[in-house]
Length: 322
Image (cartoon, rainbow, N blue to C red; front, side):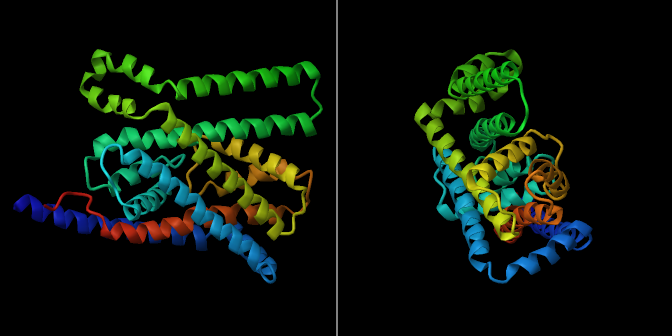
């Protein structure tokens, strides 16, 4: 009984601290940053008459995280059934948690905290969803970078051939490992150091390759949605680039952003803006519009869901109360 009361108290304290911390950090980032002020002013200038474009980006954001909820539910349902509401809440709280961690690894932990069942079993399943997204991001992002180099950089044919060979080798290795995770899990589980984790490692065996294919398919859709959002926002801020060129550029931008291991979601829009500026500079001299585009995408896809996730976290029980 005493432990239950302590858990209830701990839950209340943790919820309050989490939500207050989120509000404080958001306030510091949104109202004490010169780049955001500039982006906001530029946003207001372009807002009139562009309602439809902005609405499209917002709807795509909902579609994006909805697909991620489908992925996560597909994975967790193999262990224990969760409702769609629980899946969506878990996804959104993961976004909230990710704001405070490098490379958004907190998104992974936030989803686990949102579950009221055995969280240890869910770690492996949740990791598989993140891995599928990495596979899609690297495959399409590297292709975008390769096409960018081939189209806009003076490169000798043998160097370009080497790049193509490296790309094909990379995606072959990545996909071979991804679709043979059960083989690797069986090998690793035999190591003496991991004997206590065997039952968790073997959770991978619950998922056939057909599930891995579904996960990669959904991850590719999410990646394409993200690219389309960026392209729409470029148009919103009056940066006119042909569609096929802009998709290629955006893929290259996202690839460089993906392989940067030290970004933190709350502050990495500076890095994102610099990467975007490098690739888009030959096509526009409107540097402010580039910054506004990256910050707007960051705000719509991360900050808005994080605020909703912070509110939904008030319902969670981080420690058992019964």
